[in-house]
Image (cartoon, rainbow, N blue to C red; front, side, top):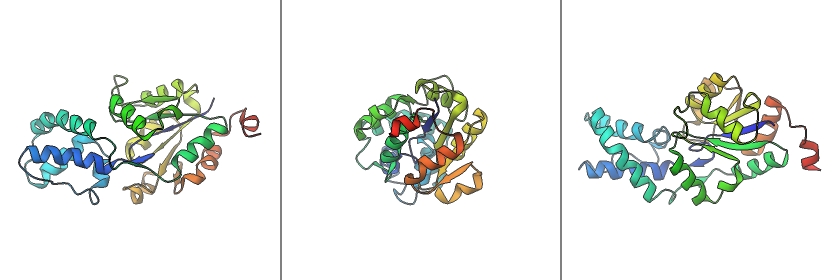
Length: 230
């Protein structure tokens, strides 16, 4: 089976506001107030918790690796307590996923969000059962851009890891797919969308309505596609 594996943050869902809220909670605990802006810093948010903490402290020339290590678990706990107040799925995302399923593709998720938080977020959004696999940052001993989480997500979705495509929004996703020897599709509608072309993925995605055609052109269609859409 051919599979389509999705990144989560910045690809399927805009999680930036809730992520920034968790980072700002930490900065307030430090006595620094809200440092990150939920709009201007959206792209930073989608690079992960440590990146947000590092960026905020660096702006005040207060960066210290030990402080980042100290507050990272606090950030995760704050995020866990309020994970989806402002998070939204990108327009057309789930329609595209359902279309891929009807065409016979396996669909799964490979994210660098900790597995428990990714599971909770997907449940909160009401879409967990749509995906046949979910591999998080700590599901395996390695994380993206190591190719093994992508391969495992494809296997758990019932597919051949050599016949998958990764849909993402960052150089991490591009490098993961390259390391696995499979194509990547990078979305242009996220906060860092203008930077995606420079990463030279096999395809850019401007609208989820086009995803099935893009995937078909890159990895072909499963043998049961005609039956699935009959």
